[in-house]
Amino acid sequence: MHNKLIISLGSNLDSEMNISLANRLLCQYFQLITFSESVYTEPLDLPGSNPFLNQVAIAYSPLYADDIRSIFKQIESQLGRNSGSKFSGKIPIDIDLLQWNDEILKPSDLKRDYISDALSALFELTDTRQ
Image (cartoon, rainbow, N blue to C red):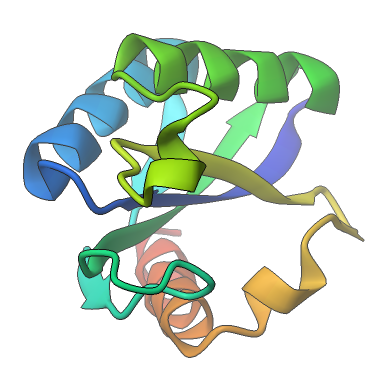
């Protein structure tokens, strides 16, 4: 059985390069993954930080949620994220699991306009492929 994942990605440090690298690395772990267009947003909870480049993805995997989170942490580390990144306001990459099958893990994130807009576009795209 494949679990449905809704993933968010964000970067405010070498954003385009880091989002692109994260996409490539995620594709190595998830054969079934579709990415939204990337959009720039103003930072939340990080005053004085650079704008973030954000993206949403829908993926399918037989792995459990904890295994998925471990993969995300590994990719974040590989792209230069460390424990001081949030404190410094410089985030090379942030990858979050927003939804696991029908379980909403980060409800406030899912309500953000850029995420709901990206998900709407992705759902339209996947509907036209079927």
